[in-house]
Image (cartoon, rainbow, N blue to C red):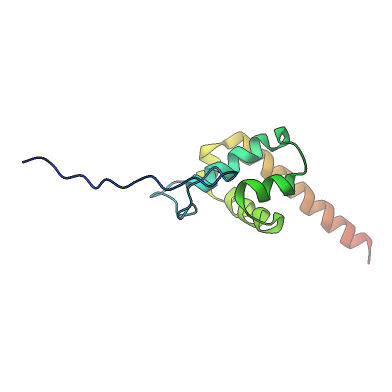
Amino acid sequence: MGEEHDVRPEPPVIPGQGAPATAPDVPPAGGLSERDRDILEFERQWWKHAGAKERAVRDRFGFSATRYFQVLNTLLDRPEALEHDPMLVQRLRRLREARQQARSTVRRAGH
């Protein structure tokens, strides 16, 4: 007798999001989720999109800018992200560190 296969339809893609509508933030065993990879891809090329980054984030991911940057910063700290795209992740980490230092300097100067 033949093998039975669990045939399930692919989850629908929501226009403008580029990711399946089901559990996009659940990573496969030991790796990055589809959403995580999509965020890294977006960071690599967001400047190619017309308009403000915040608008592009909302259109593509359905996140507020604040939520997007929370997710991105968490992602940048993951070793899987560094392994996936080392140059991008290192560049974004350097930019984050420079912004943190600039904010710290401004706070100290204000006292």
